[in-house]
Length: 375
Image (tube, rainbow, N blue to C red):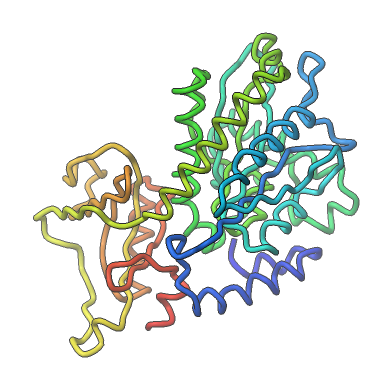
């Protein structure tokens, strides 16, 4: 969401001040996960207190989410370089904005929100979500259901600038959230793959939608739907001690795996097609090393694809970079921020709605905020 949108949140004066200050603080640091000694993970158990969540087959989402979150924390806090913070450790009601506020104030590295799903059909399976403008109709109903807890909050009309039940209540991602989208997608992918491959949960895939609890954070964030309480078999599993421990173990393992990937987030391979590059603004030789470069990240996947235009909706000169087990695909390269914004519009018109601007200096990825300071 643009910074000006934050001014609409009356309860967020503190968050706005933190957000603005962080832009300067990020510029004075390397803003690199790889250089961190301790990673702070915020675990958010959905619902709580007078908000039971969904109560399919008599099971209470708030209780299951809390038990799983506590078990996840118990496992990952054994890692010497991971610090765990819970938004709640007991059966209490925490406003959605406050959950994000907790993570923002401690400058957390990751935010994971845990929930259980429901449906009028006999649907089943696990899914993970990252923040997006809006997905399909089914995803919209899930986000509306999770966001409806806002109506239980005191002074919610003053705390939020939109109606959580309106399908038009979509506020754009902030620049920081756009930058974090790539890592959010990677974390969600690791979690989803583990739940499917190791626990044999039906795959409901990684999806994007407008969850308020994710919108409140300014770090990589994921919301997990463990399964459907409205499905008798799956509800029994999620409500059982064995089921909760199994889910927690796999989620914790995924988080640890992802943090380990962050530590070694170095470029292994760069392959560029021979097709003529799009227009690039080159700096003068004497300042070339001092300027950052901008690219458009259009995709991130474990699948290795030929960087031919037919694989990328007609876009030419797509660059493929291997980072860990993933391949990242970039389009365009320029030191001019206005040019890269123009290219971003072109890429999004092609259908890459989640594409975003990435910045690099001396071959290393940096924040766009840092890059702008080199202009």
